[in-house]
Image 1 (cartoon, rainbow, N blue to C red):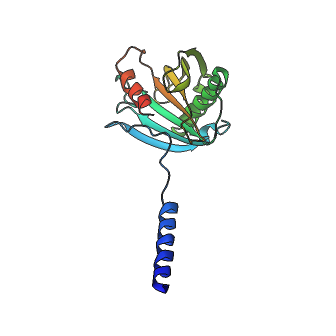
Image 2: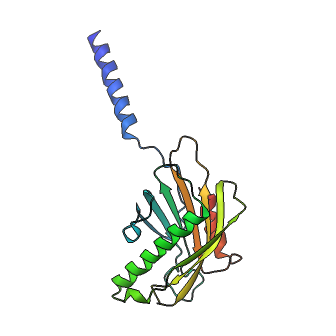
Image 3: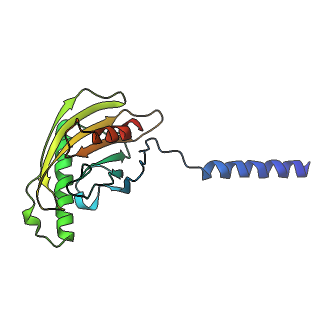
Length: 198
């Protein structure tokens, strides 16, 4: 009887430890295309500490992201996984992106020992478009900014997807697609594939 009770207790402890040791699968996972570079950091990032979001940014850089003159230059997708449910309006997103890219340009110019005064004010203009199947809202637009890699002017085209909440998840996911290429360029097919993975 004692052996049976001891065995039952040990089995219960092992099962409990196994359950606690498992981590829940993330609600949103971005594909990892071959040869695309990956970076992840905490939100808000150091270069844009005023952003009122907390969570993780998961980035996929095109293989040619830093190669001026290539089709993939400045082309990338990034996912914000925010730790609570949060609404996003067009006006809020425009401000967040302005703060984000202003901080990003200044931080990288400073790192390269280039006077940050050369950075022109970032201008962001978005418009609502028809929401995708897995989106609550979808936006398109552009950001005018200084390319900190070349110090030239840069216009980035954007498509932004505020994702529908997944069952049992208490996070907000926002996926950003960015490229200087026009929307009909084939590079957007790759960026859209990342969106379909969510």
